[in-house]
Image (cartoon, rainbow, N blue to C red; front, side, top):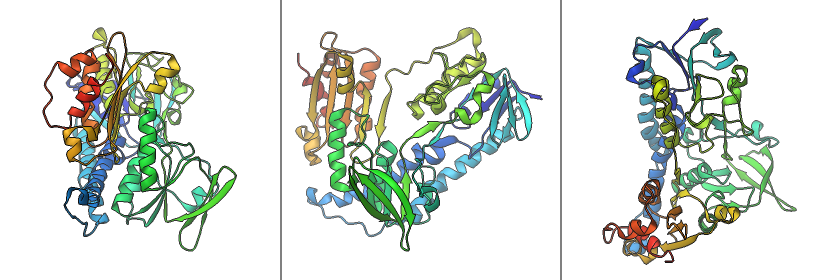
Length: 454
């Protein structure tokens, strides 16, 4: 059995484990796929590069309301793909080469499986270490739809590398991946049908956001809510999908299918229980406040252990766990509160903290302030008639409990509210304790805070 000082499973967030303190450690990093993990290769970064192109097209499509007539001469799909992956693929390759060239690091491109206490089988050989970091991420959930495997489908891991833009695309799902990709493909020229089992898109968002966003999507896409895919079959001209809505069964024909109904953690694929590591009911590796599992010296970070499945939470977990391994006498707790997120579709959505419906379910009193984009100077200039900022606060402490924004630059605008929550500012201090640039779009946040009842 080959012994290391540290074994890291996964090269996404796991690639952050290499502190200077480990320069004289014997380290192994195990990766079964492309080096760099989901965010770099098939998630956050490439998808936002596609979103940028889609946003440009929509900007031209809606420019007439500003008195400017713009048009898109062509969408060069292959050039868009090349721009994205022509930059990303060399980064992934370079990252692997760099790690391989380090004298103390062994890169193993293979599946890993736990076989016992702190022991793993990779490439037919057993390895062990006193410290093991599980950073193996998550994978797409694929529904058991009759015929789906036979007709072929894509997930977020493959859809962005299509050789040509499909004329007709079916998107299964209503979460952030489904909506971002629907935005991209619709803007770039595909006819998009979105199929969602529930009655809302982005249903985990605050109900005001979810309802408003769903209405806008319904005006843009062929949106099928409360609908399930019953079967898939090949036709002479594409793929036929059976759609059940109540007692009605309908059929549509498309060229490609994107399955985007969620992602599941990869812990079970590693056989972590053989080492004594515990999984919760949803399959996530169970960790304590320091990022350590039930087994001393085995740690977990990122999507394999955190249902938030966000790169910014994974990065912070990685930083803390690396410190805790290097400095066992000075352990730090992982503190992610509050956890924000954003959906880079059109319109953008960004949220942090409690939703109104969650506070209602908890029986917790709250006050609400809201400001429409169109009621602010810059929102007026944008001709925006759908965006808004909603803030929720505790009526007694006046602390912010949640914030939810839908509209242009939502992912940027929410940052000041995240900061206020993090550092315990009251909503009154946030609203009046600083100057807001006029007529910047940040005034939508200022005015939402001022709209909270006294």
